[in-house]
Amino acid sequence: MFLQVESVSVRYGRADARPAVERASFALARGQIGVLIGPSGCGKTSLLRAVAGLERCSSGRIRVEQQALDDADAGLHLPPEDRRIGMVFQDYALFPHLSVADNVGFGLATLPRAERADRVQRMLELVGLAHAARRAPHQLSGGQQQRIALARALAPQPRLLLLDEPFSSLDVDLREHLAQELRAILQQSGTTALFVTHDQMEAFALGDAIGVMNGGRLEQWGDAYTLYHRPATRFVARFIGHGVFTPAEIVACAHGPCVHTPFGELDDPAECPLPGAYPGGQCDLLLRADDVVHDDTSPVRARIERKAFRGAEFLYTLRLAGGERVLAHVPSHHDHAVGEWIGIRPAVDHVVTFPREPDAAAAAGDGH
Image 1 (tube, rainbow, N blue to C red):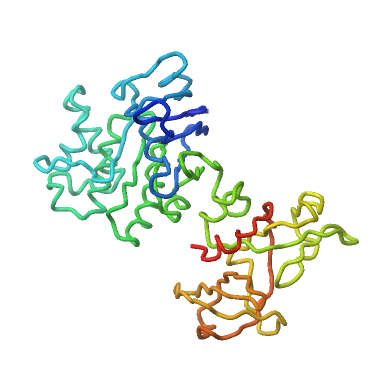
Image 2 (image 1 turned 90 degrees about the horizontal axis):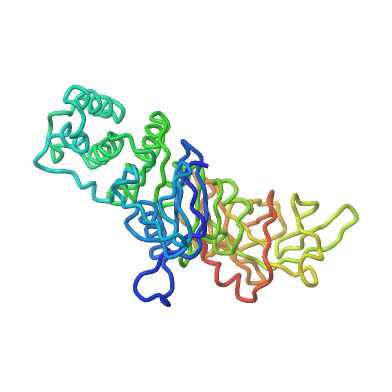
């Protein structure tokens, strides 16, 4: 692997203080883009700063191309300037008194003038700003300034690029566009990158691998499909996508396990645990909004408690007669009123279960 983070912990202040990062491990192959995601204060930026060398590891090891950058057991800590790692920050940190070209070439002072000019030109072409080389940063839009910062970080040809919420100050539509643009630029340049964000859509648009952090722990590392359909923990299940937990029972049927849910039976579901996996088969079932289908012919009815318009669809928050809460994506031409009862049925392709927690449904009932 190109980047290896092995059991890394980061502590601030006293040695007995709770670590900001606790025994995090993940790896990236050359050319991959990794994303760390999680709520504020979860440790994702501290972990990024440890890879950059801006924070010391209190335990664990960090390697790039098999070179040790940090090894707490060996007392090794390579300074940031010796790591050949580029970094793009939230605020771009552009020099207002320099032109776009001079900003991009700022870290290339040791190169001969002709080689430096050539490198700057290639970086500006890569990010689509060759036409703006002589302009000042303040004359460009926020998205263009972000691309200048990216070009400047790529110009010294770092072996690894780190990005700390670089789109956080931009509006939502521009962020989604730039995330796709950034992925294309990094792939074209063959750059291995690690990106920090709190925005799921950015993470899904960018990441080959995504790590979900919570309370300093890296709870799961995998691709977006795995995180969504096979979450390893309750926190990942709650944090990624829209979903709730509902009480369920796994029972033995003639053809295999079945799952009894408050709004119908899941007959012969794929990848279902056996009844013996939980005491009495009692468990909590994760239901995504796309696991619940609006069906006027269904005998199971649910009352609409809330609705959120999403353009092509509504996100309905529904309450069953027994009190259980579920979410459903419904095409927006089905514009039902809050308080109305509608028919629903299960359409669960991936059965994701966890041990029963009495308050789990209430705790996750609001989804995202």
